[in-house]
Length: 403
Ligand SMILES: Cc1ncc(COP(=O)(O)O)c(C=O)c1O
View 1 (cartoon, rainbow, N blue to C red):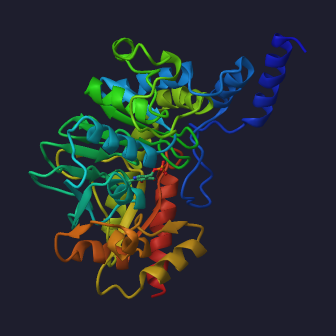
View 2 (spheres, helix red, strand yellow; view 1 turned 45 degrees about the horizontal axis):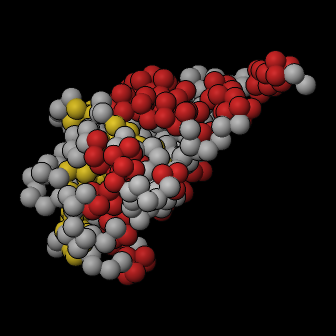
């Protein structure tokens, strides 16, 4: 089969398969947690990578890094294989440059994803767990210590610190004071897991304006070698005794993104503005309509000076609500509305917490405990519209009508 015959065959296959354009609304007969964000273009680009034989980290990852840095508004993006890897590489990069010291205290919110906290411990830092703000479910205010601000489910946390780090894994496009998350501090970590605004299936990236940090992370994600570093030539000149093809300058990992994932990424970035606008529209409308129902639960509208990325739609039952979280979840699921707890909820209450060394607690964690006991989220998607909002409103109304 010739090259052009192969391309034609792939094109026909894709045309037959991708009848559903990811930019079109999902069927309004349920509310899944997540829907595919990719379509024909992403799969075609990935197949081209396969046909060209460029599978491991190469030109498509590099193109995605440039596009993601531009989308966030920073100088550099370093792609890796997950958001959790992005957190680890970000912290290890800062340690390698001496900007963080092993054992140094880093403020971490009690509510987050598991690896928001675990990565800090894995990097040998002292995680100091603080309670979260009841309106943002994140860390707010001014700190002298370094802070890892988690933008939970897309809601930007407004913490400030001389060394602000962001877990923006689920907050693509959120802003604080007009600045995108991932560009507010020293560095930010993103995830491109399947359910996120844009996806490389599995994948992640660290964004930063610091070229030295970016170079350190380029080594750390790839065995500690020098290949993709911008200062490669200078390092090689310092070590003429080592073959530059296998020159290792840091105790790195292998957390690289493949070019198949990069192929998805380059096409997905183009879709982000449209996806984000639809998610934000949904979030604002759903907040207003659910608040107007007067049910014993609260929603989380956008906070002043911020734009929410609307990754998922969290709700918190009132203390005196007639339904438990488990019962509300059961009644929503029975109506085709998928639910989850609010990420890891109070991470201190997870069994894995007992395994973590060197973590300190700031004090009691009443908001995190409330989220743990009474928080719930339902899915949000670029493919949802007002019909899906109406479905959620009706499902909630019915769930409480029977209570
Ligand atoms: C806030 C937060 N941090 C970290 C992660 C981990 O990202 P990944 O699943 O790509 O490792 C997630 C995943 O959704 C997340 O929401």
